[in-house]
Image 1 (spheres, rainbow, N blue to C red):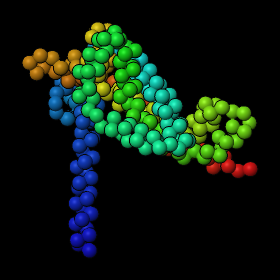
Image 2 (cartoon, rainbow, N blue to C red):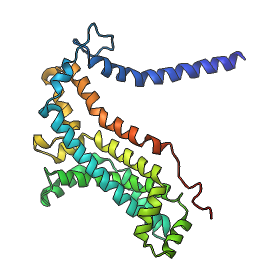
Image 3 (cartoon, rainbow, N blue to C red):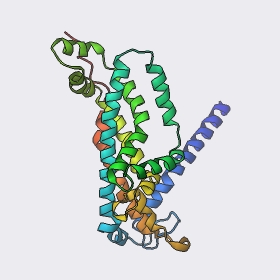
Image 4 (cartoon, one colour):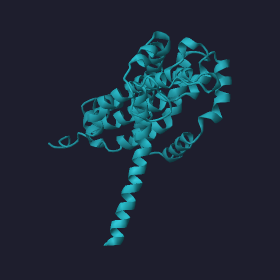
Length: 274
């Protein structure tokens, strides 16, 4: 009995340590954003100020970078989801000897470090005149997330009964129509998972836009946040915390919007009846 209690106590202590590792940085961001004397310490502020938010809520510091981030990540996410659905459909619905090699190739592509391919990508973008363009960065963002998105989309698509499509084909629907009108609506949670995963991975990406975009006016928020780290170790901690809260808001809102679908499960309960 004492041994079991000791094990439970050790497990609780370990979980509390892990929870503290996640909670303390979040607490620092929330407290430092309203702390007039913000520094690296996690502490209750002596007073409350919203001056840090006033300092960062300008067009150059926040609004333009956030708009650039929304254009880049939103466009790349839409492109990723559409391409992943079109690629996953034949892999899920048609059997071929090439399916497994193709999926293994896609899996291998997910393991490639993005830093290892940026030099040839940069040289290619210079040759095709896509360097320092929003569309070029969107294309590369989508290409970098597409392999894993295909894997996720195919696994969710396998859960949709093929008999539903066969009934639609009997009524004269094409494969594309059955995909758009039957398969994708029924795998709503899967589409939501792919959307959130792709958007979050792109939203926090610093290296890709830093390499492919040269004009300051096109930089997203993931790159502009670097401006709060000054020379000789000087950091505007309060402004950095305030900007971090604003920067995190779109991702939180996206998750809230799709949370119901993420917890929903597939609506196939009565689809096969009759």
